[in-house]
Length: 119
Image 1 (cartoon, rainbow, N blue to C red):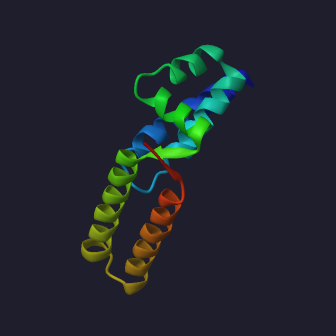
Image 2: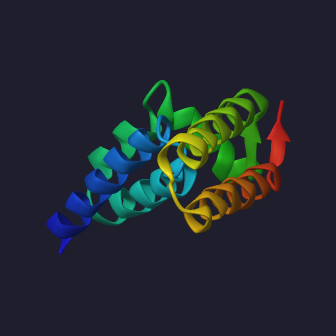
């Protein structure tokens, strides 16, 4: 069972890292899931993740303060809107898909902005 949890943690970690670059994937929940899975399966992976110079502070700050740094909020919302507006204008052919892309952008923006800002 520990091996399965560790594999799921690595998969979640990979998706979380991709989520930093792809606006539709939720980075924070996936990184938190990775930490939880590693904690239950492999303490060395958990310690590595929490001591990682980029990911560790991000996870720790969120776990302690339930807040997202302003820089991360700005980059996330900007990338989200740039990507989904591009898809709505240039990729989607049907109005329903265009509307869907815009609704996703609005919902994710509201979700990101609903967290406190870490200064």
